[in-house]
Length: 180
Ligand SMILES: [Fe+2]
Image 1: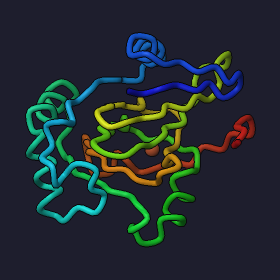
Image 2 (image 1 turned 180 degrees about the vertical axis):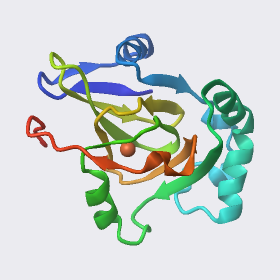
Image 3 (image 1 turned 90 degrees about the vertical axis):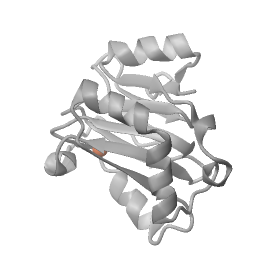
Image 4 (image 1 turned 45 degrees about the vertical axis):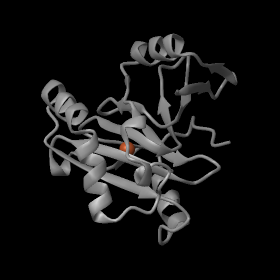
């Protein structure tokens, strides 16, 4: 279940209803998938073969088709990150730049953990959304954000896109952002 940390005040928001309410009030989509549907070999497995990635997409086909029908996604895939990922540190350094996209950025976490850091309105500032398996989140288009891993440095996520160039990252310079 996702948790929120408001960076300026250190306020934490947890509990499904409260998290959903907070995210919806900032136009962030928040839904849930049942990850217990994954077969044993796909659970807590962060080094997936192409066949296993296809099996993940197969497992969640109804959920993917439902999102696609509601929100217009046309392409989807599975990404994995772990200590086995070549150049993980370099990759994370790239991810950790604040940026925007012309389409929304939707991720369904099927294993491991990750954090989206999202720019809220002035009175809130940046907030962290800490994601666990089953959490589905979509950062709205043109909202500054970035993604990083949590301490365990492992994640498997389904990504959905509307069009191939929709996920190009536009850097967003923000002197108000405080990293730590
Ligand atoms: Fe992004």
